[in-house]
Image 1 (cartoon, one colour):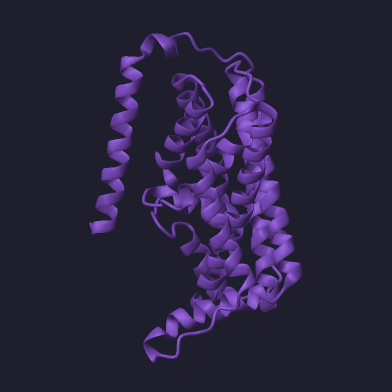
Image 2: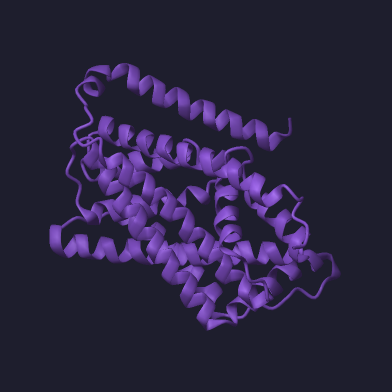
Length: 306
């Protein structure tokens, strides 16, 4: 077992112990919780699938500059496979399966795929940070709520992501940076397409809306009334778990961010913990059903050319 896996397991164990201790010390509070609106679970499942659809469409759009036109079963299937693989491999996670498939079937170089992945992350950070800044500003004017720490984090992310989109990145002259230059060239090819960038940003906004509504409903499942503004800030903050992707699928990291941000809005910790667990369990069910199905559908021929 390499050091990365050891760190990943240690982080997950520490988070699990912390959650376990909190639950054991606050059992009375958790016992009082009930599923006030269990029928909302079905809508949450559909929103989880919609999240996969959006990610698949983003992949399809990102590959258009490279003359790769994915079919519906491919872009949705690769999205499901990626989410499934994330639970087994920390770091790049399920994206590795996606890279292998594109390499075998479309001869898409790994270096360009890394540029594609980097570009996707940049635009995701740009969209999420922008939404967070807007939501915080509205919350300040309407409710008088303000948090400098959250604002500064998202402002820094927004400025860095925007700089990548606006400014041209020159390749390194040294031969030792050959692979890094291939990644830069892949991102630059994406950056040249204004239509692609705006299309991806639009899908990113859709994902934020979907996840915001998803959290809104998950709190409602427990009978807790949460406004859309705090739900949107919790949503974009929890998405930062891909920044700290040291555990498979952000296990524990995402939940911790949901709980920490929720407490800023005065939400009882036991409700925030329960919502985080509900979200993770539903995601596991969706991903572990669709992931293996599309792994078989797309990989049964070894990703060979059609």
